[in-house]
Image (cartoon, rainbow, N blue to C red; front, side, top):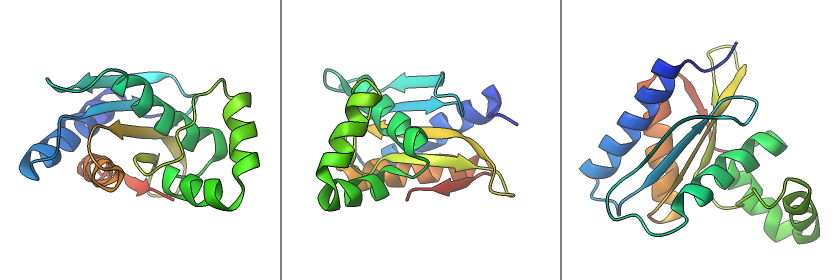
Length: 142
């Protein structure tokens, strides 16, 4: 099973709505399918340069190691050489800070990942979780 385009668009729209309601800084939102392919993307007006790559790196890193980027942040502190090596192996597309959240169905099957960048990492993660929940799916932030 994979993430549908309709689900990806719901995640994106709801994540941005959450961010606007909470008055977050402008966000970039990337939704990847389980293979790491970009399914949906949007950047709000005013996002800074390279937010797209950071958002995708958060989501791609979560998919690469099968854990949300909050868990990757913890591992980066505990095992910095491991995270550095994995970052190299995945071509630099691993951002080990909160904001990369795995998307699962009700049975726990991995459907993809969401990466958000633009505000504080905890806020990026909160927006991702809000978007995933709005799509009726389970968020796994790590």
